[in-house]
Image (cartoon, rainbow over all chains, first blue to last red; front, side, top):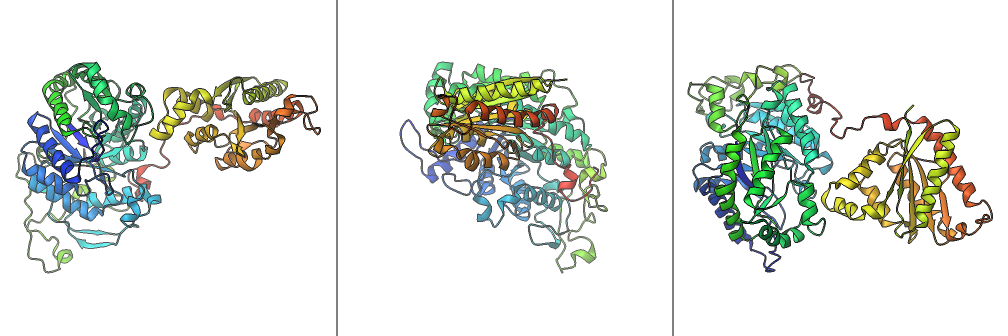
Amino acid sequence: MQFGIFTVSDITQDPTTGRTPTEAERIQATVTIAKHAEEVGLDVFALGEHHNPPFWSSSPTTTLAYIAGQTSTLQLSTATTLITTNDPVKIAEDYAMLQHVSGGRADLMLGRGNTGPVYPWFGKDIRQGLPLAVENYELLHRLWREDVVDWSGKFRTPLQGFTSTPRPLDGVPPFVWHGSIRTPEVAEQAAFYGDGFFANHIFWPASHTQRMIALYRQRFEHHGHGTAAQAIVGLGGQVFMRKNSQDAVRDFRPYFDNAPVYGHGPSLEEFTQQTPLTVGSPQEVIDRTLGFRDYVGDYQRQLFLVDHAGLPLKTVLEQLDLLGGEVVPVLREEFAKNRPADVPDAPTHASLVRAKYGDASPRQATPNANRGDNLTVGSPYQDTVASDPATTQTGSAFGPAATRQGVAR
Amino acid sequence: MTAKQIVVVSAGLSTPSSTRQLADRLAADAVAALAERGVEAEVRTFELRELAHDITNNLLLGFAPPKLEEALDAVASADGLIAVTPIFTTSYAGLFKSFIDVIDPQALTDLPVLIGATGGTPRHSLAIDYAIRPLFTYLHAVPVTTGVFAATSDWGGAEGDGVRSLPDRVFRGAKEFADLVERTDRSQLVNDPFQLDRPFGHLIGGLAGE
């Protein structure tokens, strides 16, 4: 099981000092946080995407590539990549690049975003949010699996004989999670493709998350990707720790009370009771987190939000020390107990390569000279495999569920 | 036969409140009118005052705390809703509107509604028809023709406004309401917020194994 942190990249005033960090400070702090996550033994760092102040992360692959250059084991992901307003062609290119420069340590989480005005900034119509997410991902999915794509849809110009470069590392697309707070269609989308589903789990009562995950698992099985228990589930979570509980509550309260998202609403006590937020000792965080499995089943990835609402860098690094030093080692051990053998780990590049090629060497795409004859010659690459037959459009139905040739992962 | 589920929502702010008093009278007459037709009814009453913090938190956070969720579930699966609000500054109370705002927009479809309102003078009585009724028609609920407005003077004497007494109007509204409640089976329907409108294969335009 993977453990890590995710950040939304907010630049928020520290309510205890009245000081707001600069963009430059917060960007450098985030790089420090990511590197420290690896140092304390966490597995994953996931970065949000926003296009308006007070957020800074407009270009996640730039940041993640820089972090990749300064780390060696950390899995780099997003939380989330906007599948609605980003051109799927650019997503295909950017994340294949990130795969290459990170040595296969990249995956991504797709989401629709929560900021309405972003749509017109990128020439899109917010009323089409869900259809955009559906159509764009259908194209993205093909761009990573077919060397040459002919495509037309409602929301962007058609593609004729288009090749997204570079081809995914070793011919294996980055693993995709679909993130959602409350949209069952997103759970269905993840299940349809056999991708991972990540429940935000922060802004919603556990009972709702439970039903959403159950829906995803049931549909994952329905679409023929494996049993419900084998579906790939990730959960968010939100913690603040001190050695003892009272200190944690005292230190976190001003940040909670003034947080942009839930500040000036419920009390800290109400919110911790109604959502998975845990403020207390490392042991309390361990107990609460272990309880997640009771209502979502054995799962693959747990990400914590630890750096928001104006918390200073020093405090965030202390949180990471506690997470890596005291919490995650126990979680690893406990979550491994009674975990059925057929429940997979979170997919990594290595596991995906093994699943696709077994002991054979993975594909290394080598281009031919481009004479504009992609369509007539068959492939712009020197090997003859023009596309993965299991995911090529056939007749009027397409996608892995249509062809059902075993588990698509 | 299972009892009809009637939910009463009162947005009165004071205790005791004339809004609650009107709500109770409407509920009592509705139960009596149903009983005359041989229909059993169960009444659950929610005072929005007790849910005021939860309603605000829902507006800020996007989910309902447990006590509010219970009220929202009750309204969504009711056979009839009796909704009563004071009239403040020519319209429904802000708390009442905030409650309506946290209801799922699909949750009130086909729901019979009996509207009541209270105010200091009868001059505000049309607020029922220009402010409250459009809320419910927008949500595809079915408000009955008679809305009952109770001004302070209505509680004073049997004559009321000199045209028709408050008890007469309550009786008439309750009767119209009972006619609709008797015929609905809303509370027997399953509400599944996780239900997909269409299978995903159709969402992406193919037939995709569905």
